[in-house]
Amino acid sequence: MKDAFGIPQSLLVLGGTSEIALATVRRLVVRRTRTVWLAGRPSPGLESAATELRALGAEVRTLAFDALDPESHEAVLGKVFAEGDIDMVLLAFGILGDQAHDEREPVAAVRVAQTNYTGAVSAGLVSARALQTQGHGSLVVLSSVAGERARRADFIYGSSKAGLDVFAQGLGDALHGTGVHVMVVRPGFVRSRMTAGLEEAPLATTPEAVATAIELGLRRRSETVWVPGALRVVMSAVRHLPRALVRRLPL
Image (cartoon, rainbow, N blue to C red; front, side, top):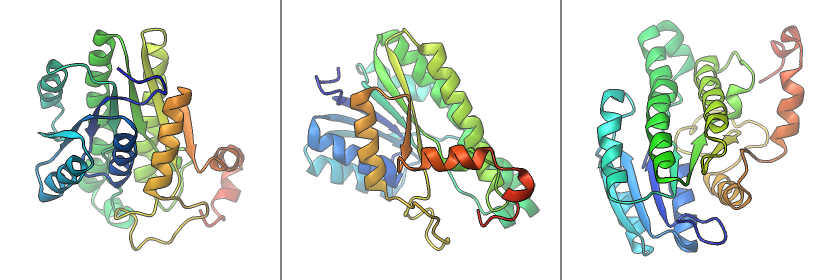
């Protein structure tokens, strides 16, 4: 169960090598989180993350999980929930893709969509049902401001995040009153391995800043978290700009 301050004692991370996810887990472990499941494709990076978190005092287990294999999700994630209640599921997997390459190679574009959206729909529904069965818990979904408005520079990635965002909002509405809390997190440009080499956007943030915002959102039981908070106002304006103007902006 969560403590009096809303901090989960047990946590399942889908996307166990995500820099944002690991920054969040480190922050929560320092608070009160004691049991952590890191789910992802088996790799040295996954094992290294588990070792680091164990050094902070957490009991950490790794789990082989593939976003692109939705047929396995119910069985794989079911094993976690069979071990005991999970206070929070952090859905943090995703890929950026390469816009120019993916426009030329539709199969690559489909892989972005299947990872970021289809895989998340499957894992999100399986996790939500398990949380609802136990009667409590939070599902935290990492979305992106890229899903707020189509941009020439990343519309393949952005469209997958737009679908994920709407799905998570609807899932939150469906679970309202069940004891399960769904929180959508919309970071802007995050300085990380995934964005290395890309031109930095205004109001850029860091994995640590996103982690701080997630913790605060959990305490407040927020439904939507923007990182940084100023993006809420900025994107509200961008959403209503005429398309002809948006095409000329360096977005």
